[in-house]
Image (tube, rainbow, N blue to C red; front, side):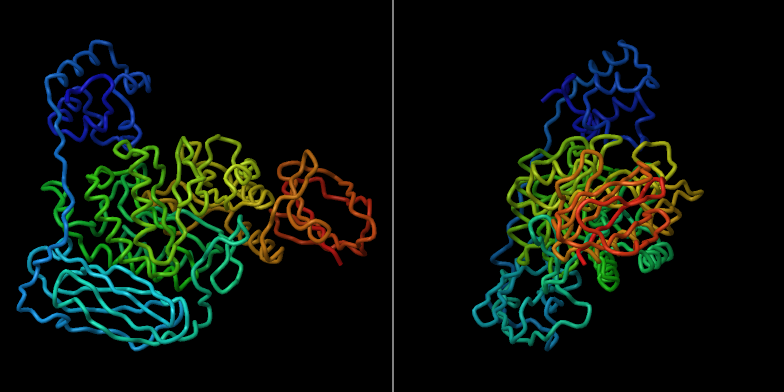
Length: 579
């Protein structure tokens, strides 16, 4: 295959010879933080995309002429099947040393540790799983190799009682091992995994409502220990109970540092061995997921993203699939894990629609617990009607209008709407990262009264480029405590969640007809409003200042048609509740 003017820059970049030609003519591409955006373009599109490049037609012609002499024949990597002959026939079946706890709480983690063989490459040579049984309940879950001859199988018991297990493996010493353990009642604070509830909302497995109040901190687990601990301290004192975070490291604006660990053996200079995972990388990730669990925070794990200088976004299909199977085996037993196939899937030039659907089949097929799963967009919405998608993880596609579309998205996809990226509170040069705390708070309220959930992020400039949205650390903005106030208001509201009600043309409202109403006035500033309620039902009325975080209960009760005086300032809400 030859390179032409229709070839994506990502394809050119992936070929060392072609990349050298491109960089000879346009050397500033080497360190550009916008490379992920450039890779989805062709050379003519890039030449016309930014006046600062000032590409002359002769330059584009010269690059294309040189590239036309290069043949691109990417190698196809076949997947590696586990070996049925990994151990000699003389090795006794089930002879591996086994460790396992005698009990685990419901929705906790039972871990089976097996000390087995380490020759060859156990990451790909050995298949391992176990079937767990309790009464008429049977669950099969995969195990994984954790280095140095250690294999692990993790299992989340979802019912109380005695469970038995039996292993299956292509390694004789790991095959046919049997045992049992007791699943006890969940400890205080363990409500089980989060599930979709009442179509548009969420709840824990024990029936406790869950209101997602999320924030984004993409690569906080790729920083030094001191910064990661500072992030955990901030989260401990925050209202956030969901955190969007990447598995792979990230290279972008304000994020050029190298990670503490890499997911594979090898190096950027010498290449990565995509058949050998680095257990230290995944153990560190697990420890942080458990830290979040201790804080009551759901870990919304982003499995792929385009902001990459190491090649992890451009692995072969076989490597992609191997990675997904491995991470699901390692992490799916943790009840606070959610799967996000990608952050901004449409920026990943090397992935096609069929790839995302294949990834979804792998995850849902391997994940024995049916964890929440979605995929996040940049410019183009994914088809959220797909059966495997449990909820819509949305980035706004309009600079200004975001949460105002929640009603429409609910009607279109008939699933929970989580606006994970409505823009970020901050002061950087990009429009997606410089809205005010007041605007962030407004978008949270707009989404809430329209029946959805909005996510937070913060991008204030920092002398050491420690921006919360990427690296974590401290929060400097003004929206967090107002978001905590909204969470309290929502938790005091209907247990089944806020659903939109038939509203007047200029103000959205949510609640339960004739029982509970929440009206939000946003940036409007009325001095009074008139209400027309069903006669014969008496209501209390609260005037809520969403910015100053006050709730004023008006004296008396109200019925039928009545007028409520308001302070004539923005960001007010009115709550009307049946007495």
